Amino acid sequence: MKKQYLLAPGPTPVPEHVALEMAHPMVHHRTPQFSQIFAEAAEGAKYVFETQQDVLLLASTGTGGMEGCVTNLFSPGDKLLVVNGGKFGERWGKIGQAYGMNVVWHNVEWGKAADPQAVKKILDGDQDIRGVLVQASETSTTAAHPIKELSELTRGREDVLLIVDGITGVGVFPLPMDEWGIDAMVTGSQKALALPPGLALVALSGKAWRAADKSQCPRFYFDFKKERKNLADKTSAYTPAVSLVIGLRAALKDIKAEGLANVHKRHNRLARATRAAGKALGLKLIAPDAPADSATGLFVPEGIDGGKLVKFIRDDLGVTLAGGQDHWKGKIVRIAHLGYFDTFDIVIAISALEMALKKFGHKVDLGKGVSAAQEILMEAY
Image 1 (cartoon, rainbow, N blue to C red):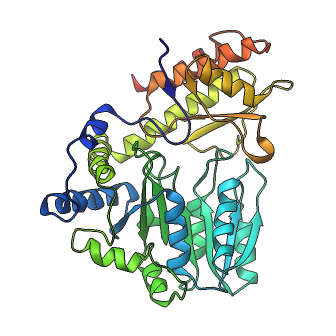
Image 2: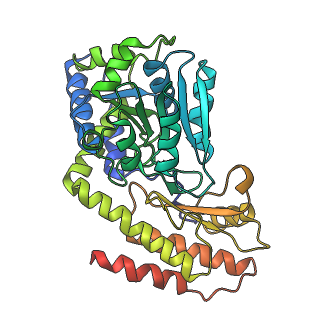
């Protein structure tokens, strides 16, 4: 018998009690019973987004929420500045292009964070830009972009929106939407919220809602104004993901009980421990200057196929990590630590990585990475 451990950056593990909540008999979505659950889940989501604005619950993955931000806030021909530092930054631009937007690419080296001054220079030089689209955490590279600094560039501009993909950021590290002036933010259920895939959560600022009134982009399912109107009646425009909403209510209660600041501290501690382990094993960090607390990326040693390494760790050791994408395929390993993770998830992941590296012929002092991680993990006790 082989026990399985999931440490990929989504889907992430689901707590047993949350899974049991979702296993209750199905309820109809147009009943007072479910309306109360829906309203409590939407209200609870405000705490994680750190906003007083409505949080929309959409039956979709996070990408659907991203698409909805583009179609509800802009019009065909609008000029959008896309911070492209990885596969998901690239996704912002592709969505814009699909709807006839004029996409201006600001390409950032993979593993690096966007330079706010470089973004400012572009904005100052082009008064036609209507939105800055960026990831809080670029999951493909495990780098974090400076959202607070970027928000300072757009906060005072009524005609420029800051749109943030917080899919692996919300519930991981601070992204206080109202305080910073983020205009739209998206997350997905299968990340830090520790639920199965299938829910996108989206919040808009007052400025963004005003932009939505002017948007001329075609839309049907992802109609944010229609969803907001229905949310006021404790329901959704279309059939919601009933079981996931029930699970969301439970998951948000867990976050509230732990305290959001403590949730952020836990993620930071697990991230620092993982990075320390990688360094102790002599592995190069992907984003040493701007690491995200959602996942840690490490370059595999020269001569080792990262794809085969990740496959061995999954199939032989029972630990699911993530490999690289695009030109980093076969060159990196990504260890997630967002959502339902604690001390010993990290110990297991690092132990498995050590064993796999040794199996593949890399010189490893077994336990060296684990020990380095433990030194930081002990902060919790």
